[in-house]
Image (cartoon, rainbow, N blue to C red; front, side, top):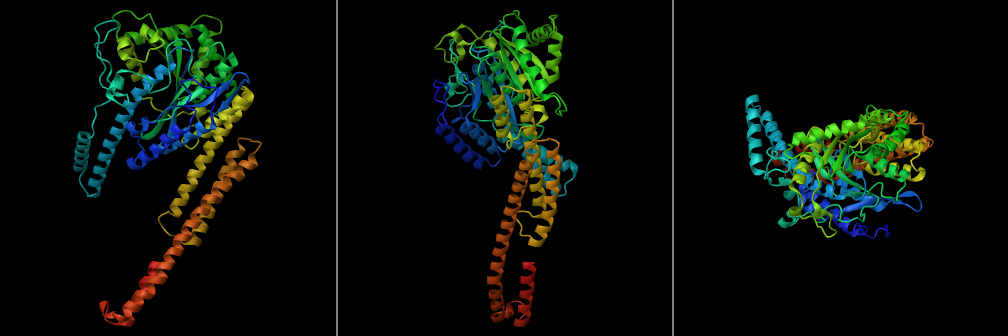
Length: 575
């Protein structure tokens, strides 16, 4: 359902476009046979989709159910193991959407390299497995893998990404070539590489805001981390402190964003000031109270990055390391302030986030302030691009990115994504950030995780006793399936009792129904296959017997002996 009152340039409320995009993803996924997205094909129809907006008059949050479901369907098709949400929030009209659109180009290049690396590793693994099967020596197995890796590398176009950094760069020094990803990460014609345009989140110059609510980029970027495929979603948010939303509404947008993001960029203008830290602490304190009493092995939220825009305090001739050192000092100065309560604030932030850091970007140039600015790179400061490149290398570092979003330690998977988003937003919408109801949302997410895990476990156990490609004895299937079903029911009931939910019985019935339906489908598949096999035997056995009788000489020469042999073979096959 469209949200007509968002009739600005940022209004992809028509479903036809995204649905066409989803269809193209299905075609690409089928051809690729590995779940990896083909950048040129999938980016062609991608667009920002609004999933939540703040109704200022009614003072509530509303979901765009169609767009949420669409994003969920697209995530499902990636074949990813988990979902990582990369989000940005901060003061309005500070270039959040512009920044995300640039970082999207970096992610496109990173995804291409990730796909290339996966193909090379797969080629090596296959060659080594074949060599081991052929009883080769360990040295020969390694040599086979080396050769396969070399061949796959030669046949995989592209270079290592990210490439070596321009270490000779100095602030306000001789102009260096732009980082390669700035142009290489574009889509469409080659000339698109020299201008940002509108091939990402909608942005525009001037003072009028253009992002309202919470938006997702419809195409996830599929990357690998520690052997797992992670679907990375970009989230753009409405600018805070815009004079229209109240402090509580700002906290609501920030709260939902912080809960969902594995890596959160807090976009600040000029410097990290005490009032911005206090505003962030407003939700942080609330979140601690909301999470009290819930089990969590570590900090409930991911990484928070304070990104200072238009930072003007770098000195001429600074290197990347010197710029980074200044930012670390600035963060430490603010968090270590002697202002009353600042030490407690710093401790809360450190306790609730897995990690925290600060970066700064210089002003991109006066041209970007013009209302008709379209993102021409020649009008943007070279220093801005090089420090953005340094920021991206650190923010998307191989050791920390991508990791699954895991609010309160509950990892978001493609199967739980839609329910997680809906429950958190519903908690804020119905109760305006009530700690009690937010806790219920956390519990529901944990419940979804438990259900998902146990259903996966049940299907795996059922697949072992009754593989889908085989016909099994119905009596044996029933005996083993009954045992597995009973164990799964018992485990789920024990798990759900710890949640102390008011609808506990209803949740148990729903889970049991899902298990029974899965088991019933497998029984029906097995029975259908069994009947088909029996029909074939019924038709083939008499024919084989007749042939044997009339042309018995083709086996033993004795028709009676041949019929006995055929009968024995038929019985063996039937068994």
